[in-house]
Image (cartoon, rainbow, N blue to C red; front, side, top):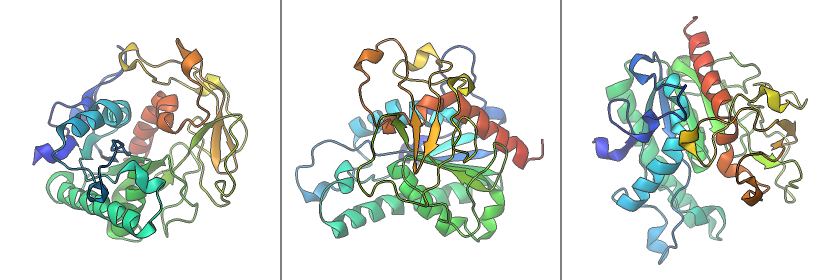
Length: 302
């Protein structure tokens, strides 16, 4: 059912949009697919423990998903592939904060069961052997890790994997058997990951674990040399339709995080947070868009 998808290449949805006037949706001619798993948007106060997972029939929440993450994140990939983004019974934001590990894991398992079912449906009815990018953010990245392990890692489908964008959660460098960390802009069959903070952010004790994979989206390497803002081809912030803002921030890998300077834009006086989690993709919007297409072209030998 199309109602169970936030984005499909043959429906009119926010993943078809592009910011500004110079970029175009290219899904009609794209030679690859993108399976995008959105982050946590289910943040409303739960009335009791029955509501650890969102309902697929929550029209207000579905609209919030479409107008936030599908517009701002999934649309990045519409130049590289046909975008498929399933709705799923996402776990409530409190699974990342509340006590009660068992119930939290059940909520995440429920969410992942939907993601896996959607992917298997996509694979059966839509993929037709085409190359595929797995892209995700935050809670979506947790599910993408499991999906890669269950369907790609050490399995025949690995040969169709262009790359995985596992953004917004710590992913270990040795997370997979035969899906390595990407070390260059054109490498395929690999994954990239980063979590973004302001330069003066200090991770809490125990948060900066050794072995976490971090790829700089301005250089597409794991080098710790600071990449200047001049390499940033455009970020997309509050005003999507205004288009990308060039040279928005530089970026430097330190430990398990990606650290940037404070972005400068109209209204930036109100942008006081030091954890740039919600903008992990947006700060590097055009660079990610171009990189996804580069990897598809490399995968196809173009």
